[in-house]
Amino acid sequence: MPDSPPEARPEARPPLVVAVEMGYGHVRAGRALADACGVPLVHADREPIADAADRARWRRARLAYEATSRISQLPVVGAPLRLALEELTDIPHLHPFRDLSAPTRGARALDGLVRRGLGQGLVEELRRSGRPLLTTFFAPAILADRAGVPDVFCVATDTDVNRAWAPVDARSTRIRYLVPTHRAGRRLEAYGVPASRISFTGFPLPHELVGGPGLAPLLANLRARIVRLDPAGAFRGEQGEALAHFLGPLPREEEGRAPLLAFAVGGAGAQAELARVFLPSLRAPILAGRLRLALVAGIRTDVRDELEEALAQARLSEAVGAGVEILFEPDLGRYLDAMNAVLARTDVLWTKPSELCFFGALGIPLVLAPPVGVHERINRRWVRESGAGFKQRDARCAADWLADLLADGSLAAAAWAGFTRLPKFGLYRILDAVGAPAPESARPTFRRSSAGSPLQT
Image (cartoon, rainbow, N blue to C red; front, side):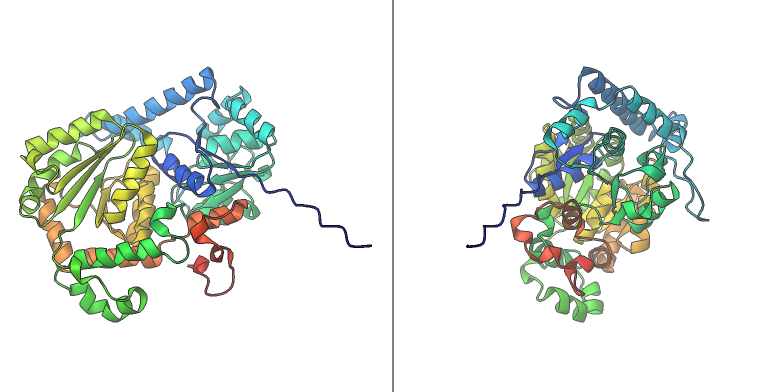
């Protein structure tokens, strides 16, 4: 009697990828994961997942955070709100290693909201579909875990995390945490999360900017960037053999081309006024064709208007379209796509130390504006200790110190340090951890675990 055909194995269901719009960071990470999984990104704070009561709760929290972030940057009146923001985002010193599992006021407040029904729509959808939850914000993970949802994955989006990222009873959690740094993993352990529930992955950078283990778009962009960032050849003279070995020939056609500086404002609009300070200094190199500038306003019309006014004050309005561009997209999804396109050709990224710090792994050197909150201060330290970026200097003299960093090859060196030292394969490691298929161009090699695999980088 012939053997019976093997039973067909049911295909694994794709995860429900969920984010919350608290700034761009959680959505930026969620969009990269959703695109790679071939599913839409679900917003826990929007219809149809969130009912009217939940939407109101999320909206109040978002507006309070955005207002606090923006006003806290003002010189005098912002001081009290800076203190409030520090308390809200507080992360205690990690050393000496000790038990930090006692719930904070923020962790208890979230627990109270969950007990009162926060996120019931999300829980019902997870139970109905049977899909795993993959979220880039702690609240959906914690409420799903409390409801007994079996497969919950939470992606951390900063180099270190607040106690609110772990449930009140962290030792009994079944959440699987996927962290971008080893420090974030050690922190979650200190909060009581079992080590077996924590995996180091790296941050989920967009597939179109990384390109899978072959790194084709990343390397192509980096080759051109190194040339533009090293006009005098100082860095290439020092590291020529290493560059030739890992990158191959560098594009000669990029010699003499002006580098592109991208200034990105956070989702809350914090630090948009910084453009008024540095733009007068940059006027001469922009008009002379020695520097190109992209001002990233995101989705906020008020930020776009503020940047346009800053350009007018610096007498640079006529340079828009001829050395200067403004990225504004009222639709969040289209903004993220447009931002990825800008990042592909960016040579220097000037931003507050938010989730964009992780994009230094693409070989983009970072200039870091003052942090907004404790987590961003730790992000900035991580970048600087990795050699991938610089603390912002006097913004009034931006043209001078940028010229120095270009002339001596420091920006090119930071690009190389970011590429070699920061984790690049977070997206694919997360997909592997969740059991989701990789994008077509990342198959089949990203799942290898043998020595020398790109995943070990």
